[in-house]
Length: 106
Image: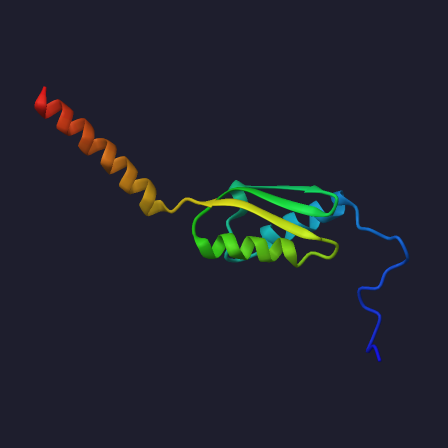
């Protein structure tokens, strides 16, 4: 026996991609742990694709959870890349040390 009818819409009803993109964008914007300023959201046939960068793995997972929690989403393709600040600092310091080494040997 069913307890209720939540989630049972009219026959043939599917949420539009534009409504899904609005809801996913709202959820990402409202989430305390996700900085969505470098995330792009696209939707095709109720399948959400997240592209861009986030600060850490937890934010990547949380962004996917936000998208997956939206009614009507059938699948989430999470293409987000983690770009940690420490990685950026390590990369720039490596470039500096390479430049310094080349200048010293010249």
